[in-house]
Image (tube, rainbow, N blue to C red; front, side):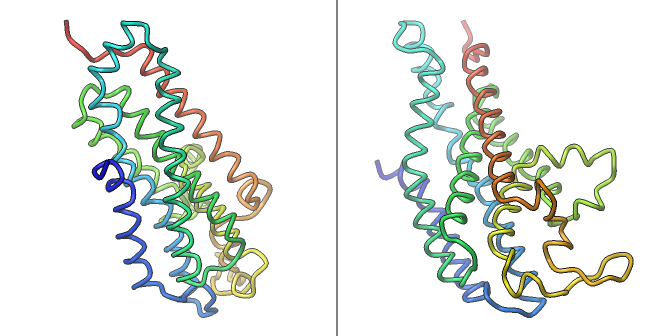
Amino acid sequence: DGEFLGTRFGDKIVFSILILSLYWGIGGNSDAQSIQSTAALLYFIAAICGYGAAAFVPSLTLERSLYYRELSDGCYAPATYYMAKFIEEGVLATITSLIFCLVVHFGCALQGNFFLLFISYYLTTMMGIILAYAVAAVSPTMEAANAILPTFVTIWMFFGGLFIVFDKIPRGWYWFSWTSFLRYSWGSMMLNQFAGEENGSLPVFYGNDGQAQNILEFYGLEGKVMGSIGACLGLLSGLIGAFSLVGVLGLMFIRHDKR
């Protein structure tokens, strides 16, 4: 199906070309501007998984009438239908994520382990898909879902750690930053890119006390949680599970058909 594949490969092709034209070979540079630009690139890579998830909303909304009919006929349970969709997209996302990461990792001369970049990007892609499914399951129309999804992603972008560092988030909002999938996706990519690397240890920023900081210290990507790739990927996987549950429960208990 050209339309089905086009919506899943198209944005990867467009963004990989754009990224290569802007960030070619920047990953190994040691100047402050390149280091900051690489951090922004990694954040953008995570963010497009959220916005690109809009392509997956029709997967549930356009099949709603068919789903209700077959559900009434006892063809399958809501969880079975959801799992079939999840596996279908998960297999295809493996291919699209691999192609995208190959282009970006080697074209932009990113550092660190390629497999960790791939698994971080793949999980973020799946997070976007699951988020789209959850929103589509609870929204009455495709138009509503397509309005709600980017709103959620944009709100979470504020709490991902780039636009305002974690230490500067007001206390009343700080708890909400833990719900942002971008926090963990970007954190794992940043740690993979800069931890243990020469340009990752350079003092290119300064804290409130005037003490020099490297890029990971500046953005608060340290400690037992945000300083651990395993912890970041584990929490990202936890969010995938949580929003999968929302999607399944939405399919089970919310019906948008009118009788």
